[in-house]
Length: 215
Image (cartoon, rainbow, N blue to C red; front, top):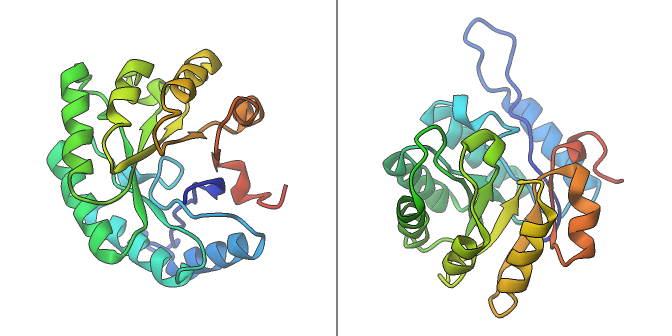
């Protein structure tokens, strides 16, 4: 479901005193991207400034995205947090709003141990919605190592990983170790998308695609 080019979309804001989310701009951006042939839309990821959005803004962006997309491509909603309870609340809301799946970043700043990371992702996957893990150690301070990813891939609702570690060797081990699972390894870094595709990657969650989705 989450293969090909999936732009991690920006969250536009109005230049008013309240700095409200610019829903008209959001709709326009999404229509442009779908018109250019992208294969999915990812709201409220790192590029969408999810860590700085209020719960209300977060839900509004996801709701508006789902409404505009209207089933034309999958919507993978970012619902990560460094607080598991907050991530659960965001994930439940995204599920109720009709997201096709959720993108979940590892808890940042807190640096949970291996057991804590496994529990965090398992709790979210048990909410019965497709979960794509997000490994970006440069932002979280935690690297989801291949053995942990392979273990988590056995959960029926953990369907993939957005890999932005920059380590092609690590990506290769994850792909090799999950061949028996229905599991996608997706690039989270435009610069290494080509080598990832060459070793079996499923696509890219792209920042650059916001500007040049057709390339």
